[in-house]
Length: 343
Ligand SMILES: [Zn+2]
Image 1 (cartoon, rainbow, N blue to C red):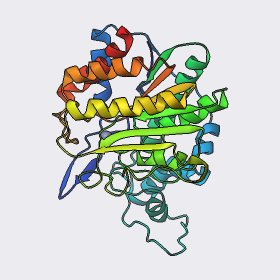
Image 2 (cartoon, helix red, strand yellow):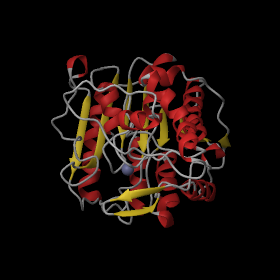
Image 3 (cartoon, rainbow, N blue to C red):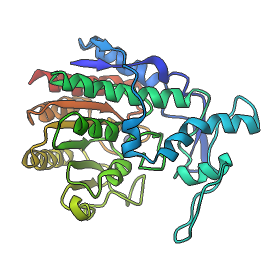
Image 4 (cartoon, protein in one colour):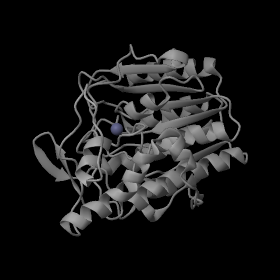
């Protein structure tokens, strides 16, 4: 399987995040990618290519161009006010029911375009965001050129980012950008299977009223877990998108005995949808030891996940999302890719 990877994410680092009542170093770190690349190489996957530079056109199809512009300008504006070395984060968030318009103040834009305190901006953030988008789009190019499966090693992740809001370590939605690009290059239907522990609220919202992208997500239920407000089974899409959004929420403590059958349900729905391409939002924070997760999946379970995805028999584009248990992260990701490749 071809891997697409760039070191351009590396300077998106050094910020802290608020976890309930504590300020802690960001769990979403550059070292995550080192763990993954090392484990993939040990498992025999070393066929990595650098991404090709792409423009922002596809990003502007799934995101508000004003939001994308904010992502680029945020840190320079912050630095102009506070000087170098810190990180930009929102101080307030929007209210419902009133007309609220951002103004050129960086604080106003942070309030408008972010929905939590887990999307800090540092000097290297925009370069990382832009590179992750290119990593995703290069995967699309390779599938279009005939590769059966590719793995876009995107960092930062993307599935929490909506059309015009960043949150949950996510800025641009790499999987959504990939899905849109697959449609642009000839696919009639694309399915996104999101197996990250957290609900892909951003991806869901982007495609909620569309039938050309099926979104199926396995995640911890909103009663127990971030993002707390979305991810219910009753969210099935709206308008032309009705029936094309499938949420499979599960309680904290879920193990593979329950998670595996839920994956089978998602894959059965994907099979009946008959997509031209399957995009997999690959998060492995469902692992039992994940500090940001709460499920009980074990490392060998990830081999079974890869095998089940392979049995769908579709051109498959893996896009990296979450996973923060540093000692097992690489193994779990490599297990999915090994399991997929053995079929
Ligand atoms: Zn996650």
